[in-house]
Length: 346
Image (cartoon, rainbow, N blue to C red):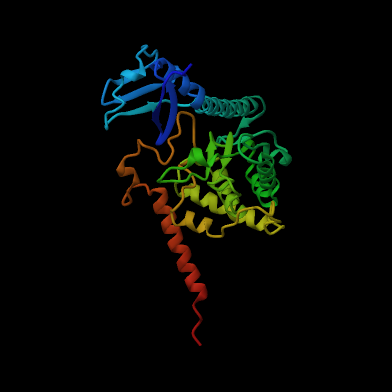
């Protein structure tokens, strides 16, 4: 007894050709079942583009015999459109994980707000304070992002900033008490035009700092992050980047440097990322520190979209932009350094 004659059919999927053997009595339904068993693409996700005819076919397939297809035509080709079940499951999982991370972030911020309402009283300038004791002029809580790699290392970094002698002295002098110090996810605060390094929410309710490199493979220079923290602490008093704000930032930086009896301390780990040019790039306007103090509403990354061009211009009565202020400060710093290096006349 002879077996039924069979033939080979080639199906193209994502640039790869897959060959199947079928008996002469096989139908499109049989082809769909074989694809599901071999490539793990459910029939419900399959679409078959059969050229030159009959064209597009999708599940449920008609019981068309495969032998009726134009197999002998030189233009005959079957292209499969469909996503494997594993890829679909991975996409669903990624979407679910993203949602969980966002919910955890919002929950942490909500907890910080509740703590602030229960324990903090605002001074006339809006700075958060817990009591008159200098021991409370610090960060009440340090919170790393648990969904990023090595959160325990980020916690050590945040605690190092909290316990930095210079930071503690400056916060005590200005009576700064901040309920939450947390890290910033670089991916959520990076665009082709800007890289936000820090945020101060509602004049000291929460301070976020970019601790990690963009690739998550290390940590940024500690002294650069500490300077960013000085910048964000100044936002506890002044929101806009005006002259008062920059004067206070400079004052806090000097106080931190003077009180830093450890001279910067030891490195956090042997893997800590160090780039001494970080702050120079910030001073030259190549990186964004932040876009003023963040208060309620929605924060627009990379700039405040409702700012008019007039408010960014300089001149009589006009306000200078952040980049213009930084550029001018860098210019003045370079002039001072040039005077120091210039030898005196004999």
